[in-house]
Image (tube, rainbow, N blue to C red; front, side, top):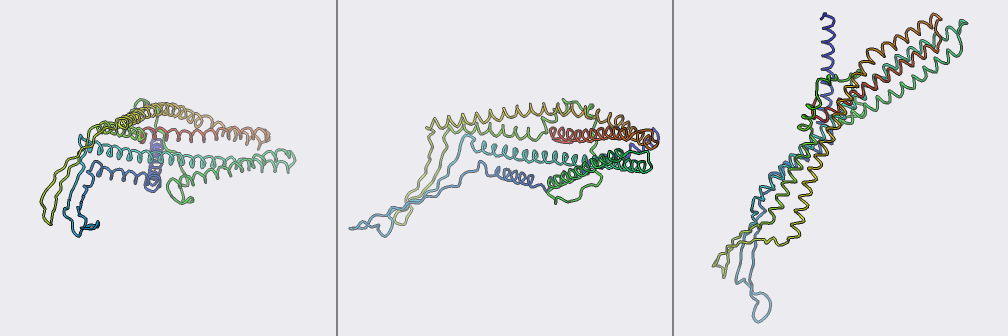
Length: 410
């Protein structure tokens, strides 16, 4: 390997690392500032706080009764109570119901955390796509400016030749018309760049006109052929936040079903009391109270509901896994195809089209080529540029999709 080649490779690696670091900073900013993520974080904190109170005993109840005889010979209450009753009662769930309630709260907390991770994952994906749109608009605008310079040069040559005699008026109009078309396209691309800037800053909860990198570059795309789709699927099944959300939902529903089954068993309420007569405590009480689960229809309906909720959660997980498998296979295949298309455009189509434009321009300068030939070569180059920009953008989107599905960087 020559020193020049080594220097180029080192610069490419450093540039790719800088781009990845820039996007990582944008994603980290979105995670800290995006209101949607903040809402999910607060919901997760609330769910975690509920774990501590789940399964706790209810507050005890205090009860007092006064027995006041009526006055004689009237019917109004007497002046003092003959008997006073004081009681304290505590309901105590049995059969592990409190533990099951704590388990439900714990799974709900895990589900909330996974939901927060899913929102962060989606925001990260949207940041990557918005950045890719921003880069694509920049790339298209830069290439269009180059084409516009060529058409300006052609229009000037056509005017000179027409002024000197051998030129044609339609050469000037043809070159000028093409130049106007490129100017209109450039204005549209600037609008696209501005829209991508606004969208990206919106994801970061920043002002719409906050500056972004003036020379954005696409992220380096790993060689997808070295990453088997099966290995990516294994990562997705473990790390995709939406799958973890559904798994936590299944566990919560299943634990709720077990709690409903335990509701067939009675709970107990314990109590103690004291009886006071004529200012003296003369008797004490000990109480035990059981609820009788006689409402069979209600409990069977609750069991059917809990079983249906558990089955629904499992079916949703199966559907989600199927969708992830399909989307990951599709993105994997398309990313490989896009990589090859981009290589052909970069190494064959674009260089040949640029050579064609320069050759046609030299031919027109030497009066060996007509304006129509230059315009045809320029339009061929323009189509190649448009396809290259589209393929570059689509490649970045597919990369972001794979990373969204596997829940991390590729």
